[in-house]
Image 1 (tube, one colour):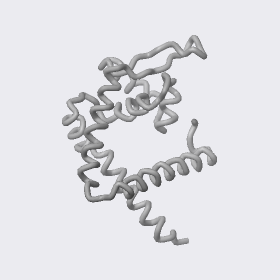
Image 2 (cartoon, one colour):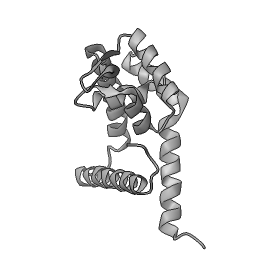
Image 3 (cartoon, one colour):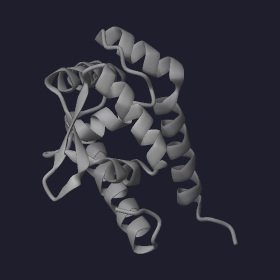
Image 4 (cartoon, helix red, strand yellow):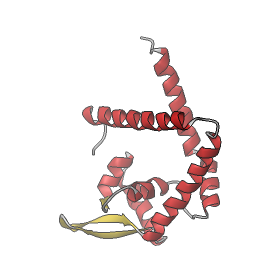
Length: 158
């Protein structure tokens, strides 16, 4: 069975975006310009914590990032040593801990995001405000639908 042309092109576009966003050189350039010491493996954890209204369990971080728990544990330890995150008691389970972003971690995320936003603004400078807004809305809708589909089909733990 052949996939419809729009799905073929969408998959190609998403692959290109994924490659662009995960290149090591791009990460190094962005964090260098932001003046932040943040390795590529710790960045998604720090971003997720920055967007979480409350501290998050390690297992939840692993589920949300679709990685193994030991990977998250190692990265959290590195981020903790760097002063970017802190462990706090889990209010629901006295034996467990959660992880929260520190003020220094939040500042680091904001510096990296500011560099990324500036780069996007430069790259999309010729786009209309309406086109940029439409793109953002459609991207959020797509991710929400992908997540809903994955959850309905048992593809994630959260």
